[in-house]
Figure 1 (cartoon, rainbow, N blue to C red):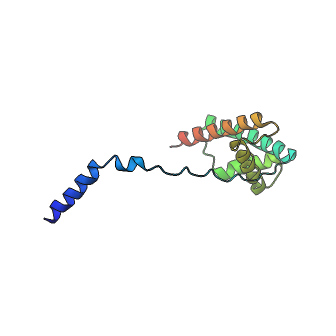
Figure 2: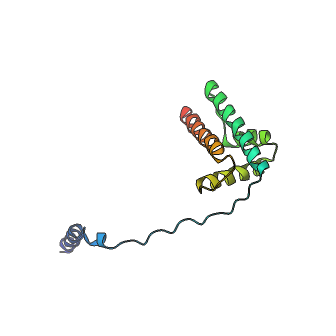
Figure 3: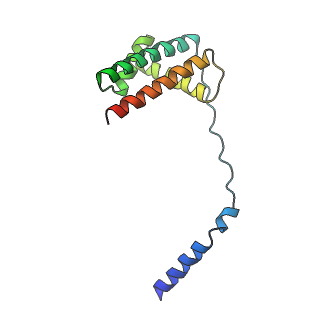
Length: 129
C-alpha cells in the first residue's frame, strides 16, 4: 500500500509538468560594478607584463615546458617593474574594466592582449593534460 501511494505521487508530479512553467522567476540582479582606478602607468605596466607573459607562454609551447600560474605572474610582474601582488591587482583591474565595457585608453589593444594570453594559457594547459 505504501509503495502504491508513492507511485501515485510520482505519477502526479510527472503529469504536472506544466505547473511550474507558469511561475516566472524574477530576473537576477546584475552584479554590482566595481570601481577600478587605473593610471596610465598601470596600463603601460599591464601591457608590458602581458606581452612578456605571452612570449613566455609561446616559448613554453615550443619547448613543451610546464609553466605555473605563479611563475607566469612573476615573469609579468618583473616586466612591469612592480611587485607580483601589485601586478595581479592591476591585471584584475584591467580585466574587470574590460569585462564591464568601461572606456579605457587603449581598450581594444589591452583586450587583444588579454584574450591572446587567455588562449595561450588554455593551450598550455591542454598540452600537459
